[in-house]
Image 1 (cartoon, rainbow, N blue to C red):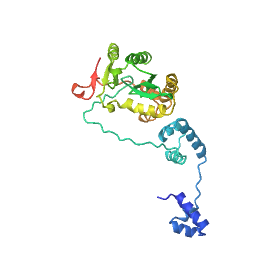
Image 2: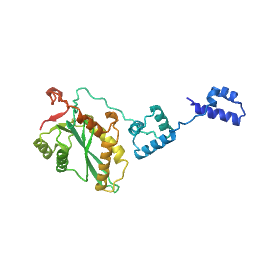
Image 3: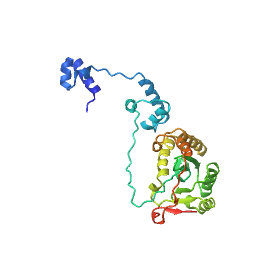
Length: 299
């Protein structure tokens, strides 16, 4: 498909190089003369808006158009979405990302969905390396309902005792969840962790081994954390990584629009949820026959 601007360029070439009149040039390329005479005019605020979009894209290189649009609307820019899309494309700001195949959820899988803040937390480990090649273990903790990034901890190694240390601090400053979801990693199924959670009356939900899609919230978050923080920074050491991780955690909670929350931030969504009356199901535990895919242990 040839765009109107390309047709105008072709007509200009025929008129200048071949000496054709505008009428004959229009006939050759099959275009209306009115189209050829049209001169595109940028909106009076296009340059200012484009400059702001470039700045936001530079500050957040992994944000797409919709997230940038949410930031602009937060700043009071209420322009037509098509105009924003046109400027975004003209500035060449589109992200190139390989699309992953989505795995269909198998029938019979059990999904315990959080119904209010601090109903279900999830935690998981990631790994990365410093610029000198040293390995780092990263523990992420997430509230599945509000999507708040509760804590990040970078260490060279992360035994069960340090997992308990992180949870103990969070329980003091945040409160105690009803359940906590994880995979079957040795740190999560360790007796020290299970005994400590039992003493605090927290239920554990262990996913089926080899089924990370059952821990969808934290797995989705890990992808964003890898893309926007770990891959975007180089770490001199654990202390440097911890500082950068803490800064990104604050940005994620208080600044970054979240698509599944209607482009609110997790902090805004949590504040709105706190003002709403909490509604819980009459049976917080799933029926016994529905626990075939997830090991649910109430400790």
